[in-house]
Length: 145
Image (cartoon, rainbow, N blue to C red):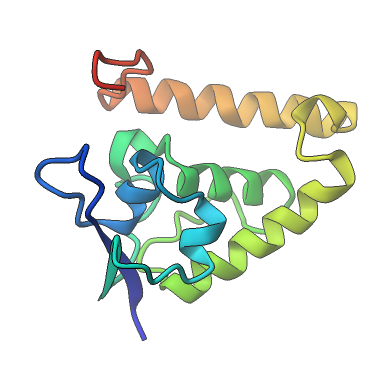
């Protein structure tokens, strides 16, 4: 079974968002866990598709899925060369669960990480931000955000 892609019917998006990964990043209606957990409400109709990879993700990978992948790199769940290209919904969901579990001892706060992990987290995030900016990502909120 392929990755579930949401067709977001949230009224603020015209045209509607057709990519679950973009919907996770932009749609305030549901949190990542609710979408990945199988929210099948009328707002999110599912179709099949695979994740394009963090290197091809919207916003230069500055999305919730991108954050999950970077955190998986941080905790050694994934090799840093793994972009998750072609991953299915189930694989992303499993990775989300593993990353969530890895964060639990630290209360999901980078400031609670041990010094070595905190330094590595800052390095990974800095590199990701620079790459995303180089690819056109702008962290500034627009008038509609």
